[in-house]
Image 1 (cartoon, rainbow over the protein chains, first blue to last red):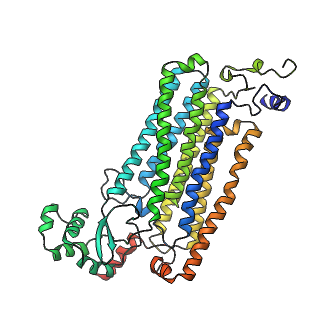
Image 2: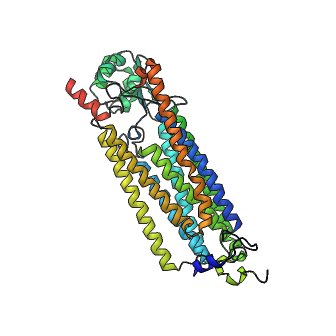
Image 3: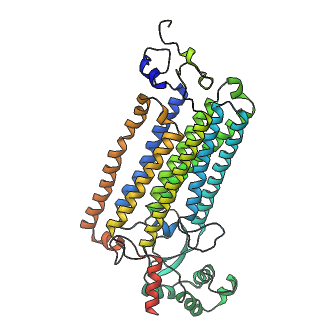
Length: 290
Length: 164
């Protein structure tokens, strides 16, 4: 039936939307189109820099931790949780929009709350991941000695691996404080950090050279800039989305859409929310998979 | 106005705004089936992507061939595009809109084809030229022993084992 209407309607004769969509919804689509080019430009510039360098850290050496799992090597695990959270929140958003079509106020409220919770879980996961990357203690070969470093502005600890024969001389030139921290971080001794500081240097070096500690050189500086820039910009979009959803929830509760006779605003915010999910699909691809 | 098509006659409850001529009406059971189907497809595609991600990780423990890695990464990119298609077409209902509108969204997106090819080629050409004319850059940044991919934790440990 819709097909016949499409063919027989004079779409451009005025009085109706030639695209058969309400004005605000069209504008939301065009905003999202332009936003996709913003994200696209960011991700493509990442690609350009990556294609322009001989070395780029593998995702599995950077993103291999999980909350409360300590030093266990779990590549991709945490980000898969984040991805599924966002997919599920997208599904609950579809359900909220559909409930809106049916003018089911209770349904809209319920699914909006689920979606907001999904968004908040995603943001908390991202906050945890950023904190972890910024505070982790990685052994890095700086010049002729080893330093304990996390991701810093213009620096990251995920460079090329240092071969065992180069680690031994570097350990000899490393400060005792750093050695104590490394022994403590690698769980090589039951002694506390303070006790380790009093341990003779040779003993610390002995413990470390018998361990499975991996030392790396500093990685390409652009890595951090792109990672925090792009995931931060995406996280900013998610935050805006959560705020908009909360406003929608309040308006639904106040009966604004009920009185208006339509839940069109839910549809528009829904489009935005799905777009945020869509962008994550590509961020996931560019940072974590390839 | 009188001899034109009168949209207000065709209004369904969900399309109670004047400029829209007809609404897409899906009954609850069809809708439910469609959402469940899309959710399953998206989850399966994500699981496949993760499986390939782990394959890449496992391959890095040995000496992977560049072509094989490129092939796997290409497959992951295609799976991602499939996911994007399902999100846009079903969740965002773009597939239900009329053709003219779909085209105003999809045609500008074609710019990405040029965008990606041109800028990746640019990066690649920069690297090639730098490696050719700046030996220091080449020496200091090319991973030792592995022209393409750096060695992995596992590799380090096995080398260590041999040493002891």
